[in-house]
Length: 292
Image (tube, rainbow, N blue to C red; front, side, top):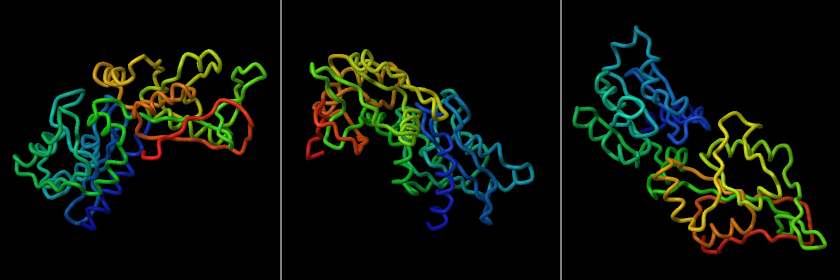
């Protein structure tokens, strides 16, 4: 188990290289280890629609090492796929290569896989060890796993607020006044987080007042798709998942929109940027329930 942990940690390192580039697919890393403990192949999922981690790992094996694939172990952070999608099934590739043992981190809840990859391997005589660094592998792809388990996007609520709990100031007439809370470092961090989600939601009022660009220009990766809220948020979330393939959503709206998600219990993660600015008056930031 100590060796399994060591090589799965390397697979996790590789998987993270796909951050912001592979969604709505998961980040996956793979390592092929010979019987003598030597790593003979490595790979990760580089971009959406591209070869999977297992394929990249097998392709990286040198010709001189091909003969020892039959006495090697493949470590992969997520259950190998068993269906034909944008690429052929990785479980079949593993079987055809004659790799006798596979160590898996997370089970894949995607309906087209969901245990079928592991079953295919075992039925072909491959020894499969499950749940190697399961918690770490699950955390890596919490967005992907949550979406396919709950049949809605993983939802992150995000806002910045003053030290005294306001999201924006107000003028003498009670109209909202935009306040700049973010500094250079937090702005880069925010753009990185945006690159990791499929879509971002703000209300029409925020668009009219702030004219936000909602891109990730300060961090490499694709900008999230812009989504506007609908009256029935729960139905909208299910539709975004089932019809539009959106597995992760960041909500960056004003207090009214954020409260609507909180009241509906539609959130999986909350990021609050608290600053030292004191406004004295303004638009109050949302409050999270004590039992969440």
